[in-house]
Amino acid sequence: MCRLLGRVSLDAITDRDAIGAERCAEFQRLGRLHADGWGTAWLAEDGSLQRLRDPGDPLAAAPLTAALNEIPARIRVTHLRLATTGMANLVANTHPFRWGDIVLAHNGSVTPVGRLRELVPTEEIERVGGTTDSALVLALVVRRVEQGEPLFDAVTAVVEDLKARFPRAALNLLVASPAELIAVHANAGASIPRDDFAASGLGDDLPRDHIDHYYRMSWLRDDRSVVFTSSGLATEGWTPMDQNTAARVDLRTLAVEFRMIGAPAVTAGGRAGEAA
Image 1 (cartoon, rainbow, N blue to C red):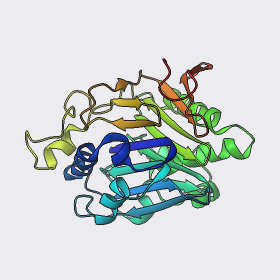
Image 2 (cartoon, helix red, strand yellow):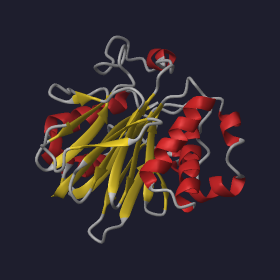
Image 3 (cartoon, rainbow, N blue to C red):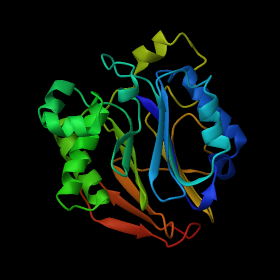
């Protein structure tokens, strides 16, 4: 169970440029609860996706502050981790996971993990790295991409299959390549991790929307960027994603395609700012 922030923009900007310094600080403060490491991936000037991961405390991480506020990029995905019970707090288990120029960050869980591992041969797991359910999800996506499926098709097909096999799975995802950013909101039937909330010691001082809307995903579009986030930020003026929905943003145009899991994609406008 984790927090997600993903953005794609026409020009190289920072998350602070897109959502403001206050929301960037608020996102990093979510590390009070999601304190089991952090990671970020971004599109570098040479067109490759770069990645930085740290299993330490997000609140004290100056590189995370810099990533959110100071380092421009056209695509950035950032993740704060609240580790699933039994998943070691190691760099290898810290999101985003990566294969080539595809990265994936996950909020939620797919359990029992032993059943999920049965779907992924050891050699496929080793290519992705890590031992978590999230790494296994990426391995399943990679398999389909290597078979020739477009990334958006591969992601939505994997989510559809896993929800059929694991009806209580929570699969909120951010997936990025040098050409696109994909967001998925699919957690119907998943339980809110209230035991983790209690163990945090925060009491009633939990981040906003965590009691009733922990798995909510929202998105914001303006004339130069499209941003997705999980609950915890002030999102007045943002649009909540529908349950069992995936969105793909094209890096060249910021056109957004929406797809109900298991249904054809629908393009919402062209460039950012057009009506959905």
